[in-house]
Image (cartoon, rainbow, N blue to C red):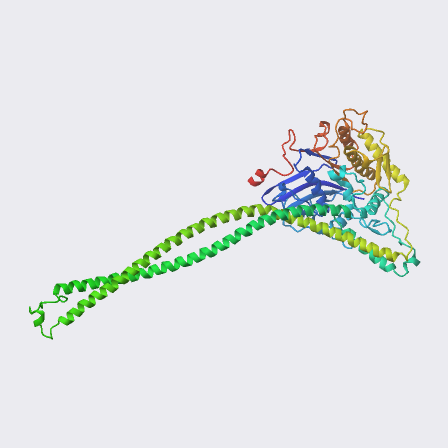
Length: 615
């Protein structure tokens, strides 16, 4: 069978400098300070090999595509290309290191399918020459096709799994997957598929209810495959309770802020209504003042004309009583045809009109003054409204700034709660289906259980010896006698189960398990992807103060023996991610990437933000 070698991992983005690491075909060590992107390299490799999601980090902002270079034992070179949030993976049959608009040689989904080959799992299995291999699906003896993710979980190991208490064999931590995970190890140790056979005698299959049981089994399996959170119902309910408490707190705080904001909005609305009324009244006052200004001009013009008429009459004596200005006759001697009566009436009319116009003019002036006062008062109120608008808007912006993170947090909590509720609903549905199946199965004999632990003793012994030799080569304290229990999938060293050991020993045993599996299967020509990625296999080890008091403590040179063994007896390609500086003796024989470490020129996997923006 073929094996794969990782060549490079490269992040690309428009206007961004490439972020890349090159991998040695044997040993690559990535070490340095925390928060420099070391573990992100492991997660990105896993994502490119078919993991569903890659959780973003601030440093990957602006990067849109990931390239993973691969080389096959038969000489083929290929590049996998995937967006940071993409469900499809493109395959280029060449070494690609930059963004391209050229069409891919293949476009594949990330999710495995037994009915289609247009997915990365079936593609890589076909490259390895093992597509179509079968493992157990469940304890009823049903089988399924091998998924590349089954192999990737044994080869790409993150720091939490490395030191976790769960067996290295049980890679997902989900109880419903245990049978399949044990069957995967059996396939790797023996090279033999699980046989396809009946799950019960043929005469039983013909009984009434058999078809219903099969349908229920299928529904149960389908629902179990929908589960994405490695937790049981009790743990899910605890998580849901914590989320609900967090949501209640956020809702209470948001409710207070929203109530305050609503009160401000009501005040602003009332102020807008009052300001609108003032503006309308101010417009009316301005219109009246404009009209009264014209009327005032008219009154002043009328009074001016009456004054001129009066002056002209006085000058000519038209409006005087007594001696006639024309003939000198006294009033008693003036005959009836004289113009005395007319001129007297004219003078009276002019005087009366002058009095009337003057009174109207005075009333108009008083009205104008009153309107001017109203206009000044309205202007003051409008200015006061403007100040109030400014204060209210400032308070609203402050409340919005406080609400924005609460709204985001609440949305995230609601999304998480929704996921947990969906998981619990699936668990409840599985329980309901199991109950229905139990009621139907009373009439059916129980089919013989599958034997996921039926690994030949010779193969188990051989694998135990391989792990023993690895631990000895690494100078791990103790006799390092290894026992693997196929039923529980637990590994014990010197009689102590790995899950009961301290974090340091759990990590080193897990690393020995992965390395020994790769080394043994490479030597025997058995199934293995060809590479191992280990995140933090020896970071927890410290030199012991008293080794005799605690024989489990690591010797001071375990790390040196660990790296030396990987170089002297390579199990294939190994990529180590660590915080600590590797021994100086290996720097010339391995490919080393130092992230923000003493003497390193590289601050992290991604170029600094200043460099990115400058470019």
